[in-house]
Image (cartoon, rainbow, N blue to C red; front, side):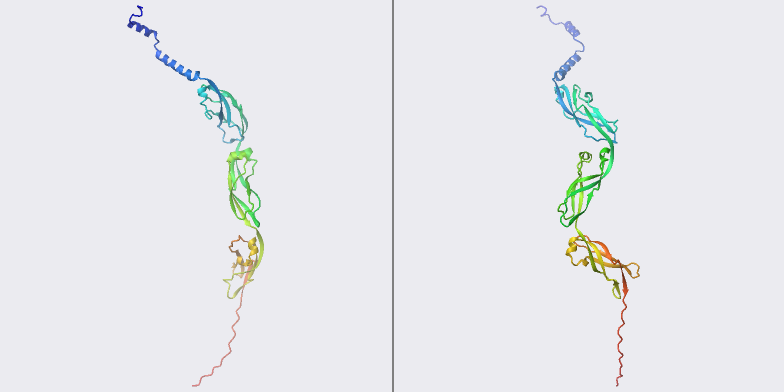
Length: 337
């Protein structure tokens, strides 16, 4: 009891200070950090989680292309403290594949656990699949024409004259093995059933999955030139205009015969077919031989095409004017004054 009641002396405080380590502050901080780390990491439960890891291809040579549909994601099982593992989301980890030294052919890349980069404190338990297969091919460029595909027939007495594609060809860059087998690109089927006039349509191309990967879903413009059926008609008695050859000159012959391609309705319904043409002559050598020129006049039924003109050359002749008849002489008798 006497010892307890003894007052604390200065020397006693000094002895306590000598007993306490001089770096007690650092030791205390280290102890506190260790406790916190144990609580959040060491003291946390260890859990496993499956995550989808995207495959990232890097350093692919510019003259090569991957021609197959490879696995774009792999399934990875990771293990670690619950607080860290549960924070991992898709995209936080990637599987990089370096193809800097790739050559044309088939490459098998193994998905080894140590090649999957995970944050500190975690580890990779399993990868699925355990390998990725790449088919590498030469990268080429090829110009492919666009070919329309049609079905059906136009309306009665109408025909599909031709189809103008815009663009007429498409340039594609892709694997040599894929493009070497193609000579042209085809459109989806164009139904022309019952059409009776020119029509413009936007038509998608009929592409296989490999080409869709290269150029995507692509459409082109198709100009359908649909015209009325035509028939050949021989028209005679077309008069030659003689505006500059009147007076003492006349054309020989004065009419020509024309063979022309006419729209069906125009050829059958128009009884005055010569009125559809203008016929003139040109004196090219000023020797009386004149070339015949026949021009179709504009009409609402469709174009007219000249096939043949008979004759191609006409002449002009001078017509001698007959002298006027002489008047009888009249005798005059002088007037007497």
